[in-house]
Image (cartoon, rainbow, N blue to C red):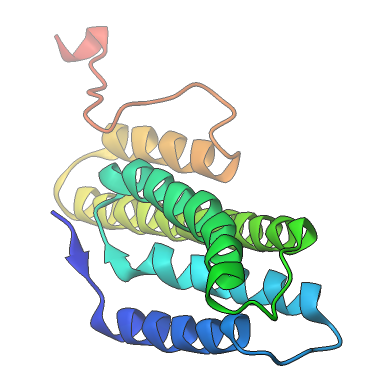
Amino acid sequence: MVKVRISVLIAFIITLILAGYLGFSSIQLIHDKLIHFIIFCILTIEFYFIFDTQFKSLKLVRYLTFFICTIGGSISSEIIQNLINKDRIFDPIDILSNVLGSLLGLILSILYQNYRKSLAKKERLKYHKLMNNSSNGVEENAVLNDQEDELDLGNSGRTTPSDYVNIQLKDV
């Protein structure tokens, strides 16, 4: 289920209005390419975090953000800007700045989301370890410690599913 974060949506709309004003007005700014880059980076980050999703639907949010912000917004804003205000000159370098800023925003958003996901996984493992210490024996704690060690290694070792059961011959 996808929920919308209202506060991020409001921030996105305000940034979009600011970007529209800067893009469609006849203001000549010194660092125009840098402003394009920063605005599209911020817009992409805000758009990405508008959606409050479960970790399973993050792939959809990533694709949606890429196509709407990086492809659609970066290119169409320059085309629309030239159609609305004839004083503004179409500049392909502006499109490149928009796309690069949007890609940076998307990459930063994905990295932050992956960081939050790994923290949540560590917290779940700590919770399971705490619950198993109080109710079960040492064997299950060894399995959880192995899982926690794999997390610290960045999952470079063998992967253990979350529903893994450790049954040994002496238990049978």
